[in-house]
Image 1: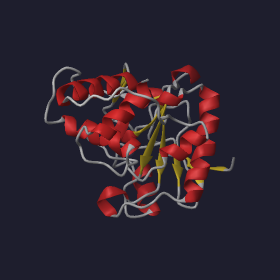
Image 2: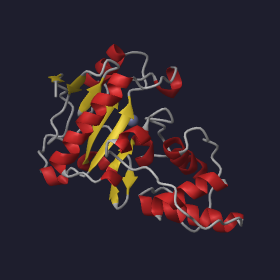
Image 3: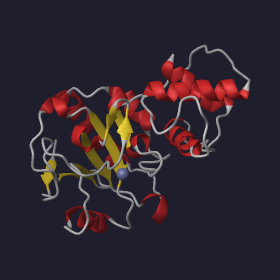
Length: 235
Ligand SMILES: [Zn+2]
C-alpha cells in the first residue's frame, strides 16, 4: 500500500502494545477543504489528531504511528470500553461534513479505506464488531461519518458489520418494541442510554443507529423497520 507520511506531533508519548489496539474508528474531517483539515490536524492550537487521513483521490497519509495514542475519539464508549483513544486507530476521510456541504465519499477514498482497514484488521486482530463510526461511540456529540458512508460496501469486503434478513418475530406493542430495540443496541455495543428507562436524549442514539443501518430513514423514531434491523443484527 502506498502510504505517505505527514507527521503530527500530537500524540501521547507512551507507546502502546499491539494488543491494546482493539478498535478502528472512522471519521470525516468536516471542514471546507483538505488543506484546512490537514492544517488543523497539524496545528498545535488544536488538541486533535488521527493516525490516518485519506483524501478524495484516495491518497493515504499516516500522521501518527499506530503504536502511539492519537486524539480523535474524545469522550466515547463502546461495549465495556471508554475513552477510546487509547484502544483505537483513528482514520479521517476528507469530506466537508454536515455543516459545510456533506459529500458522497469518493470511490477512490472508499477503495483505499477498505484496503487500509483490511491490513489493520489483520495486523491487530480487530473484531468486525469493533470497526465503527465516530458517531457510534459518541452518539450524543457526533454524526460522522454519517448516512452517506457505505457500510454495506465495507461489509462485502469483510470489514465491519451489516445485517442479513432473517425471520424475526413481529412486535407491534410500542413499549415492548422500544425496550427490545434498546436491549439489542446494548448487545451490539452502543452505550449512552438506560436499557430500561426512556429519555428525550434517546433520539440521538436512534439517529446514530439509523445513519449507519437505514441511512434513508434517519427519523429518530423506533419504527418497525428500525426495530427489525436491530433484531437482524442480534439474532
Ligand atoms: Zn470524528
